[in-house]
Image (cartoon, helix red, strand yellow):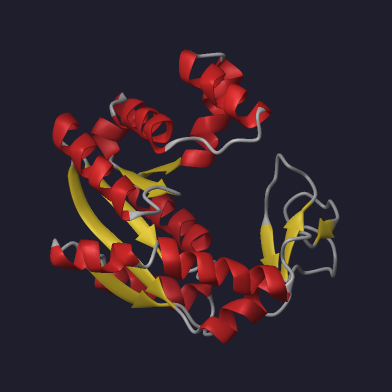
Length: 221
């Protein structure tokens, strides 16, 4: 039986940054549904071909296809041995119900669903201050307010230029908050009723301080 973790929270709350630290410390495998989609398409699998066809038509990938990819990944040896942190799934209550079935089928255990709470105005400011490395192989993410690069506009890791995504505008940030509240926030009640939800807070005290709070609520400290 493997321990499965889910990090939840609004856009910009630090799920990615803290998830990276968590996986690095614990050895838990990071599983991104976005990465799974790309890997299946690159492999030319039956699922990958279905995904390509949907994308070509401009359609969304169905919950059934995403769930099939998640189930396939969670059945692999590295996750059976080390557990995983799910990134991007579940986003809705129906997806959470499907995930319960997958975990039961594979004999895995939901160790914790961590809700990272944060002030909306702070998150909007944080998202509009985000900068991305232009080198896709690097993928480093910075924030010019809380996590700036050593040299303005240049990635610390690879030396390539940083850029601001077009969708990191204030209007887009607030729209993303609205979508989160409508689609994902109901998961809070879902996992609270199951006794699997734990809470932590993300603020402007810095990634190290935020991660130490996460460690305490997950009883890692």
